[in-house]
Structures are given as structure tokens and as C-alpha cells.
Length: 148
Picture 1: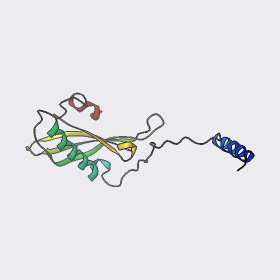
Picture 2: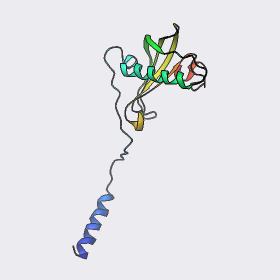
Picture 3: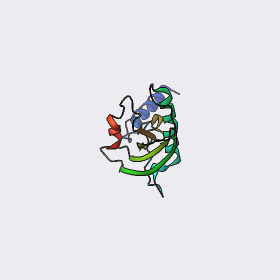
Picture 4: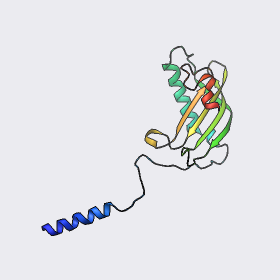
């Protein structure tokens, strides 16, 4: 190409790059919340499975916790749903249940499902707190952060 063609091409590219374009970020994958038919997201298998496996990890790696595992979930229900809004773009579902543990006791569990908050904002995230197992008070005393 000659010099004039290079200058013209550079000018066109510069003009095209200044055109208004909507903002797009690679990590802003947005998965809309859709109400599930039936019992809802609180009793989805992947949610309960995630809680069970993370609880097993927790009791093995946090000192002075009883070495128990979750056998079953009972009385599962949704406490609150916070849809995405302009002020808070993360839809959340707050849930409560009872878990039967391998030591024969039942305990309350509070958990939430955050949509679009998985690893690198792809997928969903689950946070949970079993009564009596929050040794480091991550969710405040008595799992208060997830109960509200």
C-alpha cells in the first residue's frame, strides 16, 4: 500500500473506534433468574449436593468440629426472594431447612443461592450455615447473616 492509503485506513479505523458502543465486560455474564416449577431452587439437587460436599470439607478442615456428615434435608422452604434490581444486580433466594446428621441429631441450616456469582461470574453460588458449626463466626452468631 502506498502512504496515502495507509493514512486513509488509519483515519477510518480511528473514526470507527470513536463510535458509541454499549459497554461490555467479559466477566459480566448475566443469567436471568427464572422461577422453577415445583418446590423451587431451595430443593434443587445441585444446591443440596453442593451444601453436603462443602459441609464435609468444612468438618474435616476446621479444628474442633464433630466429624459428621449430612444425611438428609427436611422441611425445606424458601424464606425470601430478592430479585435483581438497579440497586442490587444479583438475584438471591434465601432458604431454610433441617438437616439430619450422621450423629443422629437434626440441626437448622440457612442457605442462599446467588445467581451469576459462581467462579468468574459463571454459574451460581451457594452459601450456607449449619447451626453450631460456624466456629469462626463467618456468618455472625447463630448464622444471623443468612437468617435475615
